[in-house]
Image (cartoon, rainbow, N blue to C red; front, side, top):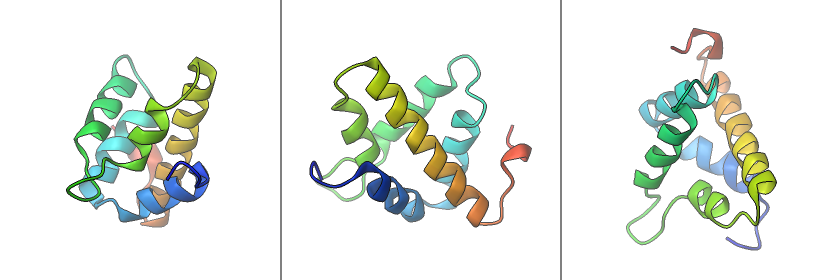
Length: 96
């Protein structure tokens, strides 16, 4: 995964999420009130793509070299999750 572009990995990751997981993450990442980003990160850590591998979002976020890179990766992840959310017919403006 280290040699894959995060954009492609995040797009595939967002597509593979179930509606419940996608809704939870988008509800935390769209507005980012108070602890929302921290809650989303904790939730990401609980998601497994298979038995032996953590999800790619956690991989890229944990390997960020500095805060700017971490923030950019978080923004990129948010973009692809919200794009998938919209693609499934949900409206980000309705997130609570």
